[in-house]
Length: 345
Image 1 (cartoon, one colour):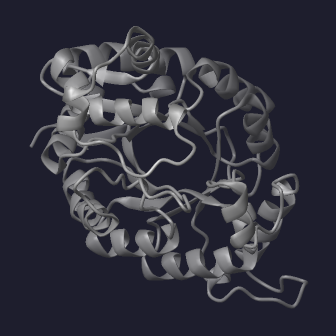
Image 2 (cartoon, one colour):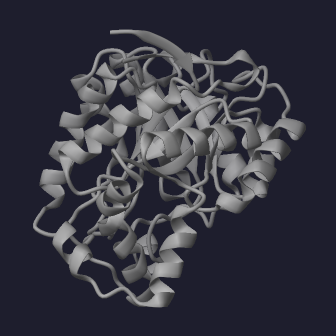
């Protein structure tokens, strides 16, 4: 294998469920995929948190992170993210403290404040807050990872023995400012709000205050990615997800993503085609050359230190092929300010 230095690449996995599949199969595919991604030299593998969402089998990120860590050796694994208002901070500290104890130096704890579900399900989760006290929850959580007497008399065993890397997730300039005020690394969801990426990351760097977690700004940007041999092939591979996004707009409840045949046979109207074009344009969907060029522009525009790929395609081999081609493309994209990670090809 050759070694190249470029923008570091990672994976964000929502464990998608497609027609003729199941949540069980999707979870097993994710566990099988992680070691292959590790062999490609990816830096991290994060899993999201969603509830009452049959199309996304990521309801228990802490459990899945443990399984992924056990299936790999060097890959950093973590949450992208744990939606903290759904949980007691003490429980999160205990879970991720245990993961860090079992897999030292390899666990990331990404934190978000969205519910990740509908209001009724949020109530069933006994949601602990509406997210307005999110900074206080993070302070409580981080306190459990500090060695020594916590002052409260409550010890999150074994969190005080080691702390995973804490990240704040967001998709707006306000979340960027919150991450900067807390001195946390910041992960921006470009796949959700691409128009705000550059503004949010710039605001984060400008407002950043050093903390016990971090002495200088540190960012990653998550992007919708599908890479295939040609632009047309990439659009075809991504078509089930893109049709799923159309269906999400029309249905109050979304079950599973359509399969390749359903996507190929769908009679797309002009408005649907415009929606897809608008969705694809700011993301990384195309041939290796197209993705390399778009990634170069995106990194230069945002200054992100790392790119995290959200690849939602139904075939395991197509998904792995996309990650292979992305690793090759990213090796040619310089990281900002001399930051970079070796990508083994």
